[in-house]
Amino acid sequence: MVTSWGTKVEKLAVSCGAESIPRKENVSANGKKFDVKKEKDGKKYYIQVKSGLNTMNVGMVESLNEMIEKIEEKDSKNVGLLGMTFGNKKAISTQIMDNLINADEKIIIGNDFWDFISEKYNMSEELLNIVSKAAYNYQIKHKEKKISDLIDIKKEELLVQWENTYGGINKESLKKAEDVNL
Image (cartoon, rainbow, N blue to C red):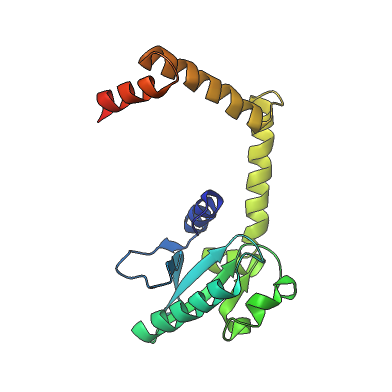
């Protein structure tokens, strides 16, 4: 995953029981690589995680096929998978189902994905409860302000701080910041 949301989902997967993959252990194809791994029942499952059902074009699926082949050739106990954080197999796009080799065996999705990496039944429901509670606590703490409002407030605070520190918001202030910090 390379998006900021994808990074958050990857961290969530790690906090639920998956592991980060050391660079030297991972494989890649066309700039793509596995995101997390899970050791279970004597096997190492290498998983490319997608936060949506239809986030892969045919080229990305072909790269995943190549990655799966590479990781499984490294060790007979390695298994390459596509993990999707929500949904069910019936809703997956045909471009994924028709192009991923052994798609029925190589996709773990929704509740099954979270239960698999956490080794805990109904983990997705537990996660949703945690998120709901966090959202409620956020609303209480910030008196019903939207997060976008808080971001705007913080942006203004940072701009004022920048102006005070570097004498404006322009090319000259950027040069001053570089001189001071580099």
